[in-house]
Image (cartoon, rainbow, N blue to C red; front, side):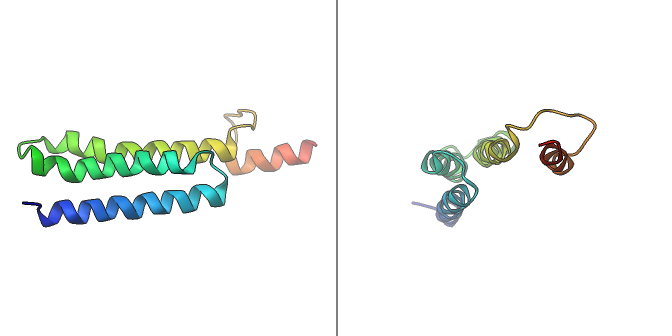
Length: 103
C-alpha cells in the first residue's frame, strides 16, 4: 500500500523537476532535462525509501533529498559566473561590474 507521504513526495519531485527545466531554460543551463532527472531522482527516492525501508535514518534521508537540488543550484551559479576571473576581495555582483568596466 502506498502511503500519502510517498504520493505527496513524488508530486513534489515532479514539481521540482518542472521548476528546474523552466529555470534552466530561462537562465541558460545546459542539459536542463538531465538536471531535472537528477532532482526528481533524489527527491523521489527520499519520498519512496521510507515506504520500502521503514527504519531508514533521517539524516541520510535528508542528504539524499537535498543532493539533487544542491547540485543544480551549484551548476546554475557556475553557468552564470563561471567564466569571470576569481577575485577574493569582491562579491560576485561587484566582480561582474568591474570586469565590464575594464573592457
